[in-house]
Image 1: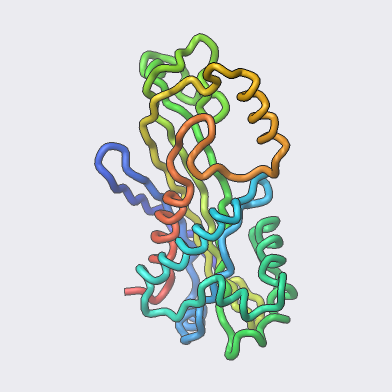
Image 2 (image 1 turned 180 degrees about the vertical axis):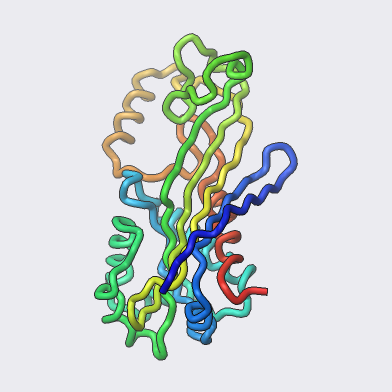
Length: 262
Protein backbone atom coordinates (compact mmCIF):
# COMPACT_ATOMS: atom_id res chain seq x y z
CA UNK A 1 0.00 0.00 0.00
CA UNK A 2 1.24 3.48 -0.83
CA UNK A 3 0.55 6.43 1.47
CA UNK A 4 1.05 9.97 0.18
CA UNK A 5 0.80 13.18 2.19
CA UNK A 6 -1.96 15.46 1.04
CA UNK A 7 -2.14 19.22 1.39
CA UNK A 8 -3.35 20.97 4.53
CA UNK A 9 -7.00 21.94 4.87
CA UNK A 10 -8.00 24.75 7.22
CA UNK A 11 -11.49 24.77 8.72
CA UNK A 12 -12.64 27.85 10.62
CA UNK A 13 -15.90 28.24 12.52
CA UNK A 14 -17.38 30.46 15.20
CA UNK A 15 -17.69 34.19 15.50
CA UNK A 16 -15.19 35.73 17.90
CA UNK A 17 -12.56 33.09 18.44
CA UNK A 18 -13.94 29.91 16.92
CA UNK A 19 -12.38 26.50 16.71
CA UNK A 20 -9.79 26.01 13.96
CA UNK A 21 -8.89 22.54 12.70
CA UNK A 22 -6.11 21.73 10.24
CA UNK A 23 -6.29 18.26 8.70
CA UNK A 24 -3.59 16.27 6.92
CA UNK A 25 -4.73 13.11 5.13
CA UNK A 26 -2.55 10.26 3.96
CA UNK A 27 -4.11 9.43 0.61
CA UNK A 28 -4.52 5.83 -0.45
CA UNK A 29 -4.44 4.20 -3.85
CA UNK A 30 -7.63 2.90 -5.54
CA UNK A 31 -7.07 -0.66 -4.32
CA UNK A 32 -7.08 0.51 -0.71
CA UNK A 33 -10.19 2.63 -1.26
CA UNK A 34 -11.94 -0.45 -2.70
CA UNK A 35 -10.90 -2.46 0.34
CA UNK A 36 -12.28 0.15 2.73
CA UNK A 37 -15.58 0.22 0.87
CA UNK A 38 -16.13 -3.56 0.70
CA UNK A 39 -18.88 -3.54 3.35
CA UNK A 40 -16.91 -4.76 6.35
CA UNK A 41 -17.66 -2.92 9.61
CA UNK A 42 -15.49 -0.27 11.17
CA UNK A 43 -14.74 -1.55 14.66
CA UNK A 44 -13.92 1.37 16.96
CA UNK A 45 -11.02 0.55 19.26
CA UNK A 46 -11.18 3.75 21.27
CA UNK A 47 -9.30 6.97 21.96
CA UNK A 48 -6.03 7.03 23.91
CA UNK A 49 -3.46 9.63 24.92
CA UNK A 50 0.02 9.15 23.50
CA UNK A 51 2.45 7.74 26.05
CA UNK A 52 4.87 10.65 25.57
CA UNK A 53 2.26 13.05 26.98
CA UNK A 54 2.88 11.58 30.45
CA UNK A 55 -0.82 11.66 31.15
CA UNK A 56 -3.81 9.48 30.38
CA UNK A 57 -7.51 10.15 29.99
CA UNK A 58 -9.59 9.58 33.09
CA UNK A 59 -12.04 6.70 32.79
CA UNK A 60 -14.90 9.17 32.48
CA UNK A 61 -13.14 11.25 29.82
CA UNK A 62 -12.08 8.12 27.92
CA UNK A 63 -15.73 7.04 27.72
CA UNK A 64 -16.72 10.53 26.54
CA UNK A 65 -13.96 10.45 23.93
CA UNK A 66 -15.08 7.03 22.64
CA UNK A 67 -18.63 8.32 22.38
CA UNK A 68 -17.42 11.37 20.45
CA UNK A 69 -15.69 9.04 17.98
CA UNK A 70 -18.90 7.05 17.50
CA UNK A 71 -20.93 10.25 17.00
CA UNK A 72 -18.46 11.42 14.37
CA UNK A 73 -19.03 8.22 12.37
CA UNK A 74 -22.79 8.43 12.77
CA UNK A 75 -22.96 12.03 11.63
CA UNK A 76 -20.35 12.01 8.86
CA UNK A 77 -20.50 8.45 7.50
CA UNK A 78 -23.97 6.99 8.09
CA UNK A 79 -23.38 4.75 5.09
CA UNK A 80 -20.85 2.66 7.04
CA UNK A 81 -21.48 -0.14 9.50
CA UNK A 82 -19.83 0.92 12.75
CA UNK A 83 -19.26 -1.11 15.92
CA UNK A 84 -18.90 1.15 18.99
CA UNK A 85 -16.17 0.50 21.53
CA UNK A 86 -18.35 -1.52 23.98
CA UNK A 87 -19.44 -3.84 21.14
CA UNK A 88 -15.83 -4.37 20.04
CA UNK A 89 -14.74 -5.03 23.61
CA UNK A 90 -17.54 -7.59 23.95
CA UNK A 91 -16.28 -9.56 20.95
CA UNK A 92 -12.74 -9.86 22.31
CA UNK A 93 -11.35 -11.76 25.29
CA UNK A 94 -11.14 -9.86 28.56
CA UNK A 95 -8.29 -7.37 28.56
CA UNK A 96 -7.58 -7.70 24.85
CA UNK A 97 -8.82 -4.28 23.80
CA UNK A 98 -7.07 -2.65 26.77
CA UNK A 99 -3.84 -4.30 25.63
CA UNK A 100 -4.28 -3.01 22.08
CA UNK A 101 -5.00 0.47 23.39
CA UNK A 102 -1.84 0.40 25.53
CA UNK A 103 0.26 -0.66 22.53
CA UNK A 104 -1.30 2.04 20.37
CA UNK A 105 -0.68 4.67 23.06
CA UNK A 106 3.03 3.71 23.09
CA UNK A 107 3.65 3.52 19.34
CA UNK A 108 0.75 5.09 17.52
CA UNK A 109 0.71 1.88 15.49
CA UNK A 110 -0.38 -1.75 15.87
CA UNK A 111 1.61 -4.67 14.54
CA UNK A 112 0.06 -7.39 12.36
CA UNK A 113 0.93 -9.96 15.02
CA UNK A 114 -1.15 -8.01 17.51
CA UNK A 115 -4.22 -7.89 15.27
CA UNK A 116 -4.46 -11.02 13.12
CA UNK A 117 -5.03 -13.44 16.05
CA UNK A 118 -8.24 -11.55 16.83
CA UNK A 119 -9.65 -11.60 13.29
CA UNK A 120 -11.96 -14.59 14.06
CA UNK A 121 -13.85 -12.35 16.51
CA UNK A 122 -15.08 -10.40 13.47
CA UNK A 123 -16.78 -12.72 11.01
CA UNK A 124 -15.66 -11.71 7.55
CA UNK A 125 -13.18 -9.21 8.95
CA UNK A 126 -13.34 -5.62 10.14
CA UNK A 127 -11.39 -2.37 10.14
CA UNK A 128 -10.14 -1.60 13.62
CA UNK A 129 -10.14 2.17 14.04
CA UNK A 130 -7.91 3.72 16.71
CA UNK A 131 -7.44 7.35 17.73
CA UNK A 132 -4.49 8.87 19.57
CA UNK A 133 -4.25 12.31 21.17
CA UNK A 134 -0.71 13.21 20.15
CA UNK A 135 -0.29 16.63 21.77
CA UNK A 136 -2.02 18.93 24.26
CA UNK A 137 -0.67 22.46 24.68
CA UNK A 138 -2.11 25.31 26.73
CA UNK A 139 -1.02 28.93 26.96
CA UNK A 140 -2.43 32.23 28.13
CA UNK A 141 -2.66 35.44 26.17
CA UNK A 142 -2.50 38.24 28.72
CA UNK A 143 -3.47 41.87 28.07
CA UNK A 144 0.14 42.95 28.58
CA UNK A 145 1.23 40.84 25.64
CA UNK A 146 -0.48 43.28 23.32
CA UNK A 147 1.95 45.98 24.44
CA UNK A 148 5.17 44.25 23.47
CA UNK A 149 5.67 41.31 25.87
CA UNK A 150 6.66 38.00 24.25
CA UNK A 151 3.53 36.25 22.91
CA UNK A 152 4.75 32.79 23.92
CA UNK A 153 5.31 33.69 27.56
CA UNK A 154 3.17 31.84 30.09
CA UNK A 155 3.43 29.95 33.34
CA UNK A 156 2.13 26.51 34.12
CA UNK A 157 -1.35 26.31 32.61
CA UNK A 158 -1.98 30.00 32.88
CA UNK A 159 -0.67 30.69 36.38
CA UNK A 160 0.39 34.36 36.28
CA UNK A 161 4.07 35.08 36.58
CA UNK A 162 5.40 37.38 39.28
CA UNK A 163 4.30 41.01 39.19
CA UNK A 164 1.03 40.07 37.52
CA UNK A 165 -2.37 40.56 39.11
CA UNK A 166 -4.76 37.71 39.91
CA UNK A 167 -7.76 39.85 39.02
CA UNK A 168 -7.72 40.26 35.27
CA UNK A 169 -9.39 38.78 32.25
CA UNK A 170 -7.17 36.70 30.00
CA UNK A 171 -7.53 34.55 26.94
CA UNK A 172 -6.60 30.90 27.23
CA UNK A 173 -5.63 28.97 24.14
CA UNK A 174 -5.54 25.20 23.84
CA UNK A 175 -4.26 23.19 20.91
CA UNK A 176 -4.45 19.42 20.58
CA UNK A 177 -3.12 17.02 17.99
CA UNK A 178 -5.19 14.00 16.96
CA UNK A 179 -4.32 11.00 14.78
CA UNK A 180 -6.75 8.40 13.43
CA UNK A 181 -5.53 5.11 11.98
CA UNK A 182 -7.52 2.28 10.38
CA UNK A 183 -6.20 -1.30 10.36
CA UNK A 184 -7.52 -4.35 8.50
CA UNK A 185 -7.71 -7.09 11.15
CA UNK A 186 -7.48 -9.85 8.51
CA UNK A 187 -3.84 -9.06 7.71
CA UNK A 188 -2.95 -6.31 10.18
CA UNK A 189 -2.27 -3.74 7.45
CA UNK A 190 -2.58 -0.02 8.08
CA UNK A 191 -5.00 1.01 5.33
CA UNK A 192 -5.80 4.65 6.10
CA UNK A 193 -4.64 7.43 8.38
CA UNK A 194 -5.05 11.15 8.94
CA UNK A 195 -4.01 13.74 11.51
CA UNK A 196 -5.57 16.95 12.77
CA UNK A 197 -4.49 19.96 14.81
CA UNK A 198 -7.35 21.73 16.58
CA UNK A 199 -7.12 25.05 18.42
CA UNK A 200 -9.59 27.19 20.35
CA UNK A 201 -9.54 30.16 22.74
CA UNK A 202 -11.74 31.26 25.57
CA UNK A 203 -11.96 34.18 27.99
CA UNK A 204 -11.35 33.61 31.69
CA UNK A 205 -11.33 35.84 34.76
CA UNK A 206 -8.52 35.09 37.20
CA UNK A 207 -9.46 34.45 40.79
CA UNK A 208 -7.25 33.96 43.84
CA UNK A 209 -6.70 30.20 43.83
CA UNK A 210 -5.12 30.18 47.29
CA UNK A 211 -7.80 32.10 49.16
CA UNK A 212 -7.57 32.39 52.94
CA UNK A 213 -6.26 28.92 53.72
CA UNK A 214 -2.78 28.47 52.30
CA UNK A 215 -2.25 25.15 54.11
CA UNK A 216 -5.30 23.58 52.45
CA UNK A 217 -4.19 24.83 49.03
CA UNK A 218 -0.66 23.40 49.44
CA UNK A 219 -2.03 20.09 50.75
CA UNK A 220 -4.39 19.72 47.80
CA UNK A 221 -1.68 20.52 45.26
CA UNK A 222 0.74 18.04 46.83
CA UNK A 223 -1.94 15.34 46.77
CA UNK A 224 -2.60 16.00 43.09
CA UNK A 225 1.14 15.73 42.37
CA UNK A 226 1.16 12.21 43.87
CA UNK A 227 -1.82 11.03 41.84
CA UNK A 228 -1.62 9.30 38.45
CA UNK A 229 -1.23 12.03 35.87
CA UNK A 230 -4.28 12.64 33.71
CA UNK A 231 -5.04 15.07 30.91
CA UNK A 232 -7.17 17.89 32.28
CA UNK A 233 -10.49 18.18 30.50
CA UNK A 234 -11.21 21.82 31.35
CA UNK A 235 -8.15 23.10 33.19
CA UNK A 236 -6.93 23.11 36.77
CA UNK A 237 -5.42 26.43 37.79
CA UNK A 238 -7.20 28.12 34.92
CA UNK A 239 -10.22 27.28 32.84
CA UNK A 240 -9.27 26.25 29.29
CA UNK A 241 -11.20 25.02 26.23
CA UNK A 242 -12.74 21.60 26.84
CA UNK A 243 -10.54 18.71 25.70
CA UNK A 244 -13.43 16.51 24.54
CA UNK A 245 -15.05 19.37 22.61
CA UNK A 246 -11.77 19.99 20.76
CA UNK A 247 -11.37 16.26 20.16
CA UNK A 248 -14.86 15.91 18.75
CA UNK A 249 -14.28 18.81 16.34
CA UNK A 250 -11.14 17.03 15.15
CA UNK A 251 -12.85 13.65 14.82
CA UNK A 252 -15.70 15.05 12.75
CA UNK A 253 -13.23 16.53 10.26
CA UNK A 254 -11.11 13.36 10.18
CA UNK A 255 -14.00 10.93 9.67
CA UNK A 256 -15.45 13.22 7.01
CA UNK A 257 -12.34 12.56 4.94
CA UNK A 258 -12.59 8.77 4.92
CA UNK A 259 -12.56 7.50 1.32
CA UNK A 260 -15.87 6.78 -0.34
CA UNK A 261 -17.90 9.58 1.24
CA UNK A 262 -20.24 11.81 -0.68
